[in-house]
Amino acid sequence: MKLLKCPVNGVRPLSEFVFGGEVREMPDPNTCSDQEWAGYVHHRNGAPGMKKEWWYHGPSGTWFIAERDTMRDEVARTYLYGQEDKQ
Amino acid sequence: MPLRLLKYALSREHPAPRFFRACEKPKDSYDVVIIGGGGHGLAAAYYLAKDHGITNVAVLERGYIGGGNTGRNTTIVRSNYLTPEGVNFYNASVKLFEDLSQDLNLNLFYSTRGHFTLAHTESAMRTMRWRAEVNKHVGVESYVVGPDEISKACPQLDISCSGQAPIHGALYHAPGSVARHDAVAWGYARGADQRGVEIYQNTEVTGIDVQGGKVRGVHTSRGYIATNKVLSAVAGFTPRVCKMVDVQTPIVIQPLQACVSEPMKPWLDTILVSGSLHVYVSQSSRGELVMGSSLDPYEVHSTRSSLDFVEGLTSHILDMFPFLSNIKIVRQWAGMADITPDFAPIMGKTPVDGFYLDAGWGTWGFKATPISGKSMAETIANDKAPELIHSFRLSRFEEYELTGEKGAASVGH
Image (cartoon, rainbow over all chains, first blue to last red; front, side, top):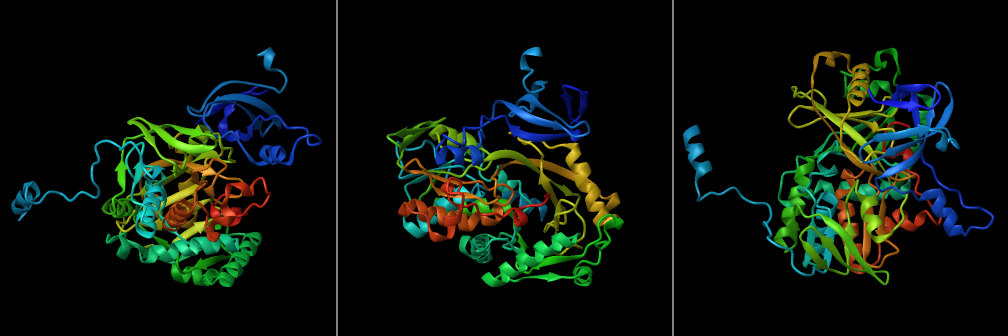
């Protein structure tokens, strides 16, 4: 069974978590071009590597960020949004 | 008799026939370089040579031919999709598949079984009716059937699914078939080779040379090859190849797992799919149950298989067929699937001149092998995509003209 560490609830089975995709900067919809917006809506950084991702712990309703190597499926660290420096 | 057979096997006068030449070293340049020696890449090479007379072609394969998702799928061929564009496209593929053993002069064990997509809820029945109407409109034989007809076709199936998810009905698709997937790759490889195409295994593309927005060549583990046209047909590796040419796509990689049981006497002669139970199952020509499930739930670039998968899948199979409880699973594996947001492929030209994409094949690529090869060959030869694959172009995303196939392309949502 795979495990993941929730920053609030500690190490829990992966089946309690939901993957939320890579953390991405939203361009300003008022100033960006249609093409930039379409790129933000649809395109993804699909190549493997160390990525910052959104994860959700279902039972406690906690959204947090995991830094994960998508090639090796190894999580380097997890933290709540905005609390990166406190880890 | 066994001794005579052994002498024959060891005789130099009767060497084992090779399917394609073992080419030593790639030439300095080719008219077309195809990255990926799976079914799609080899089919494109075959139709480039056969339909368009373009034979100065190299197929570069990182591992061995048919060793990627061509050899990892559950071999189902069908055309009962949701959008008219999708139904037309996959129907053209079924038509090519039906004559493919003759065309390639190789027995692909193409076996038309009939295909039931089971519906366990009223909302699933609504999707089945929708698909049936679209299919009929396009001229594909699909219709909705009730539990009695399903029981008649497959008496072993527990219609109540152990009381967990009673079956309301199904979408029946008469042309649904299975085929020997590795033979498809080998047949296309032999046909392409006979027409002059060169196939290089253990040859990895490490970079693509783009100058002024045009492809100039590819860097490989066996040196540089100059070419103006490159086709990427690399299921599961598409984001890495697209990064070489700086082309943005929506593709995210998620593993898809499958497994087979030990062989049994033939008892299951149809193909059964259940969206609610997340399974599809058929019996192969050597008696194994070939079973697949939904995608793994997050992005991973790995072909590692998991116990979670096989536990989940087999519990659902037992809901459908309780009598299989003593049957063993003998193999399980995973493939890396290119997942697109609309569950339709991405085919055709790209913003880079001379870089063609045959990608986004997610969990639905094997059935499209012949038609995608033929369509991509036409796209490369004419530098223009045929009308048949217009709805699958990469630019549909920035034009917000998605081709929504999610209700028909895979199970598990």
